[in-house]
Structure formats: structure tokens, C-alpha cells
Image 1 (cartoon, rainbow, N blue to C red):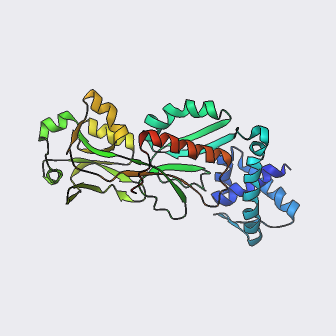
Image 2: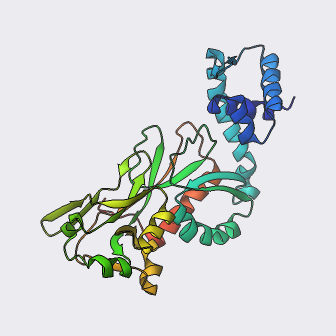
Image 3: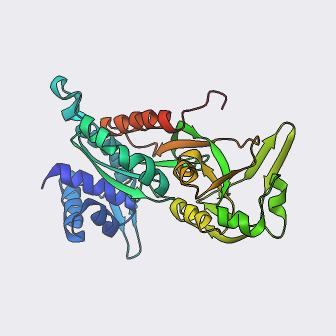
Length: 305
């Protein structure tokens, strides 16, 4: 029995709550994972897991062992890079999930710079806005816009994105150009509505002087993917609320026009979130620091927040 593989298999079964899911994330067969855990139990002479036909639960002894082993595995993961000659070379796979527009327009184009600095880190990158089960799916961290409502996660504020209101020229030709945000409540206007995973819809609040307007608006499309949301606006389906980095190329081409000059929208905070019971490995630390560097170019943290 490879004790290291057996410990990893046990940890993944506990976190995933299933031998099958653990096997998928470890890229092993279910039989192999089962045998590794059984061999570990035999070596320790302890029952670590209670198995039923429906789910797997950790025993009291298993819970104590899990807490110790999570820390041990994290230390082993960092051991090679903690040596003096390896201190600048974190390595291994990082599983990260980021919003699709952020992946397409910011992170992936900048990855060659990260790879040149840390050539031994490999990414398993999810590009989505869905709610991710970081423990169950064995994801190291997520990058998300908007406030983090899941209190079980550790969240680091890494940036603030400036927002603006935009529409396609063909939409404005069809319904007219609104001068005041309240006009978007009129029957003739439509917005493209974005559904935030886990915390409802974006609150379209705009301010100018002492006036504050929160736009609900009518819509023909509500969507939970940033790239598709942008595509809906470009197709003339309604008015968009966008971070500047998403709008910039389409403003330059004339595919979008800005609305409501002089009105202010609170910036969208960006966070890196990760499970609290996970040791922050060196590879994760350097990734988070790099995201801060990246956000300094596209939306640095505002001290007033």
C-alpha cells in the first residue's frame, strides 16, 4: 500500500462524501479508491468510514484522523518548495473556477506571464459563474464578482471593477436613447438581466448627487453566464450593466454605446475564495498574489470600500 495515495484517497472520500466522486477527482477507479481506504483502515486497525448503500459518513476516529491528515498532506505538498533551492518554484496542479468573461478577457491572455514565472504549476480551469462546491469538487479556489455570501469560505478582496451602463446602437435606434435611468422602467425599454449564483439578481442602483435610482426593469432574457449576457446586449435584447474591461473593446468598435453620463454605480468587488479547512499551499498563495497584480491593472481595490 502506498500510504500517501491511501491518505489522499481517504481525504477525498470524506470531502466528496462518495467513493465514486472521490475516484473521479483523483482520476482513479472506484475499486482502487475503495481498496486504498480499506488498506488504510487495516493498517490503522480503525474503522474510518461508515458505508451504506446511499452515502458514506466519517466515524469519530475518522474525523480526528481526517483533521490531522489534511494538515500532513498540505505540508507534504509544500515540502519540495520549502527547500532553499526550491523556494521560488511552487509546483503541482491548481483547480480554479473563474467567471467566463474574466477567463476569456483577462486571466487566460495573461497566463503566459504566470507560466513564465511558475512553469511547474498546471491549471485545471473552470470558466463559469455557477456555485461551486469547493470541497466536494476538490477545487482550490474560485474568483467571483459580488459579495461572497457563503460564510463557510475564506474570501480575500482582490479588486473592484468599475461598472457602466451600455446598449447596442440597434437597440437605441429601435426604442430611443434614455436620458434618465428611471426611463428604463418604461414599458418600451428592456434590460438583459443577470442571475447571480446564490445571491439573486444584480441590484441596478445608480446615484447622481443626492438622487438614487434602483432599476428593476423588464426583460426578455435572464442569464447566468457573463459571455452570454454580453452577447444578449450586443444582439440588441436590452440594456447592459458591465465592468469596464468587458465594455471597452465594444465601445471602441461602436458595437456598444455608454448611457447616463455623470451617474455613479458602486464598483463590483472581486474576491478569491477558498475553503477554511485547507492549508493555503505555496502554489495557491502565489496564484492569489498574481490575481491581485492582475486586478491592479483592471480594477484595483478601492481604499474607500
